[in-house]
Length: 191
Image (cartoon, rainbow, N blue to C red; front, side):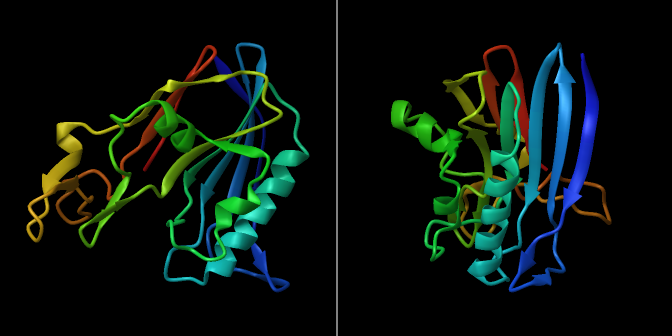
């Protein structure tokens, strides 16, 4: 049983100007008597300068550092790719990247959450703030991939996420959700 205690939207600013983009949504929940703080993220896309994602990372770090809770999470579509420079995730020094930790101990994890131009990338993440007392079981990390979510890419022949088609109502999303178990909870993020 969970109850919302608090929620707020935080706009992202760059160079003193509010970006016309999605911000960060913060929610504090009471889950069976434990405080869970979640920062929902959908950072500026790859069509925006890397500096906008760096500014989002700096804001997220500042917001999360000010929070207390049994579990403090940042999750969602971060739109960060490996060759972003400067690398936005380097500004999340007080967070643990659950996918990176899981890949250290397991080799059976799907190559990514989003497929574009013949390559997989992990745009969707779950980060755990160091002030969290509930611990993650990184052996349970998964990129969730069901048959109904997938279709064959006609260009490469690879199986890829089946994008949602607004006209037909068919499909799911161009991203795959990720999940992770904590001491007593299973957390999923995805579109």
